[in-house]
Length: 426
Ligand code: S3P
Image 1 (cartoon, rainbow, N blue to C red):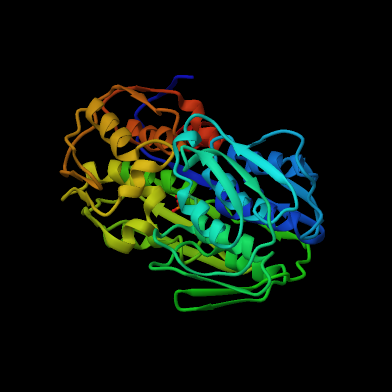
Image 2: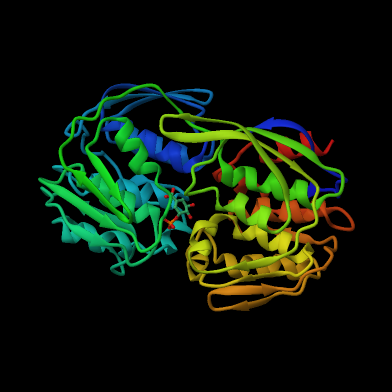
């Protein structure tokens, strides 16, 4: 579906965004294998988190949805049932990779697949540790979905992640729930820790010491009421749009500010962005607060090493800001971008070039000179939600109306994106 975006002078008003995608997946998965009922408020409205719910339903879970309130009737660690058909993870890498950890321990065989984009995403990173725990898994060409997982009794491992990936870490921890002893996951770089926090909230015995996470197997997890903070990665599009347009003053309420996610805010402030954070509070172990952002001149910067890992989902929209910044943006160590929902180095560069913006791509990053302007163009999401939203932001700063082809991709994480954007740019 094409979406037409006209240039905007600024973003104003107060908004509240849907629940965090990463946290919603984890709450749904853990609530299902906990005992008792969990009510999850502000569950993500994105298609990805609903793919997780459909997979869980196919495994015998009752999950009721009333707007953004999701009620899950947990069945305990051993209560899942064999699915009657293939599980469909849709576009969601988080669903297939994290659920694989639970499926690996079940007394039945399951197959999990997804859409065309997911079928191209590498699964070796979860297959290898799960096999080391005793699971039997086969995949197309040895490493792509669909995965066929024959559950087995699992044993604990002590595993050092070869890639900094929270999905892989979470997959192993979820499998570790079923292992007969203590599973240890060591991270070379800190990745988002929502799984660790949620496990602790539901009663697991989990310890985090520097970069090592130790989880004791077979805990009793207990369902409870949980509330998901709004998604900082969704807020990122509005924050950058507000910075980029000259007359903005925007407030975004209840945004998740977990320190393993908030590198975005530090990076932007380091670039000269005027951002204030107020009313910070903690709920279910997760920080949330209000973000106030006003139009600012961004200096530009370099994203590399562990900063790259911490900002990985935000790089498409930061690339847009980089082109308009004083000194431009350099992105390094970002080979992971090539294996996201699309090859985001290629799809970002393609759209920037359509707008007349110069960009040089490398195998693991890009170089975007600063002080460039955006020309009106026909843009393409390439079926990737973050590309659809990042280039809607670029369109706001263009010299004429732009069209985003495939704009419906945004609904993977943020179905209300265009409505909210119209509301704050009206
Ligand atoms: C996610 C982890 C990241 C991120 C993805 C969500 C998660 O992926 O890019 O959007 O919820 O754990 P990786 O684990 O592949 O780094």
